[in-house]
Image 1 (tube, rainbow, N blue to C red):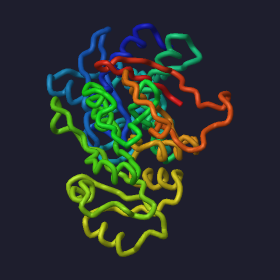
Image 2: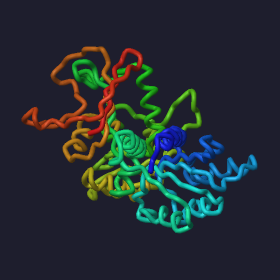
Image 3: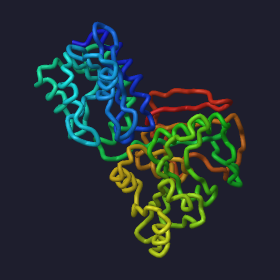
Image 4: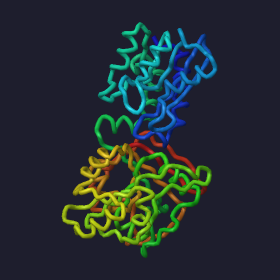
Length: 373
C-alpha cells in the first residue's frame, strides 16, 4: 500500500532523476533514494549514459559512508533493470544489499525488463510496491508526472521511433522571417539560450536543406554556463543531396556527427564525397522512414529546427509530439513572408491540431507557448 510518505519520497527521487537530463539518452531518467526510519540515508541517479544506474549509485553512496542498507526502503522512479547492458542488473545489487522494501514509480516497458525486474526482487523475499494511478488522485498525479518526465524514453522504447519536438520562433503576426528571408533575429537572446538548452536535452536536431542553404548553420550547443554541453547529432533532410561541401555542417562532420537524409535518386558521386568527409548517408523517402532510421541509430529524441516546409511534412504526417513556439512582440507583415507551418493547410478550424498540458513562460520580451500534441 502506498502511503503519503511514499509519495513524498518518490517526488524527491523524481527531482533527483532530473539531474541526468541531456546526458543519459537513450536511457531513461531515473532517481533512487535509500530510506531508513523516515530519513534519506543515501541517494543516486543515472548521471550519464553507460555509467552506473540510479540504484547502484545510491548503494555506492551508502557503501562509501559505511551505511548498511539491510531492511531499508528503496525508492526508485523506474522498475529496476534485470539484464546485463553497459552495467550489471540493478536487481542483483538490491538483493545483495538486503533491502527490505522497494517502491517503484513506473514499470519499465523495455522488453528486457517489463515486469521481470519486479519479479526477481519479489522472488528474493523483498516487499515490492508500485504506484497505481487508480488508487488515489495523489498517486495518479505522480504517475502522470513520472511518465511526463520520461516521455522521450517511453515513446522510443515502445515504438522504436524518437520523440519529435517542433521548435520555432515567430513574430506576433506569425512570421518566421521577412519577405526577403531575413530571420536574424526573430526572437531575443533569452529565447535563443533556451533553444540551446533544448539542443542539449535531445539527442538529435533536424533541419531542411533550405535552412542550410540560406543560413549555413552549425546546429551545435552553445551555452556559456555549460561549455562542455553535449552537441546533438545533426540531421539534414536533403532529398537530392544538395548540401554544399563547404558548409559548416560538412566541414565539422568529423567532430560532431552529421547525417544527410536523402532519396535513392541522389547523385551517387555527391554521396561518396559526403561519406569521405565523414557524413552519414541515410536513404529515406518519407518522414516516417527518417524516424525509423533515427531509431535504429539509437536516437530517442529529435528537435525540429527547420522551416515551414519541413514542419508541415511532420505535422501533416502526425509525427510531432511536442511544440515550443517562441512569440516575439514584433510585426513584419507581408503575404510572402514565411510562416512556421507552410503547405496547403487545413480546410476547417475544427481539424486543427490541439496542444494539451499547455504552459506559457517569458524569456526576455518573448512568450513561449509549450505543449504536447
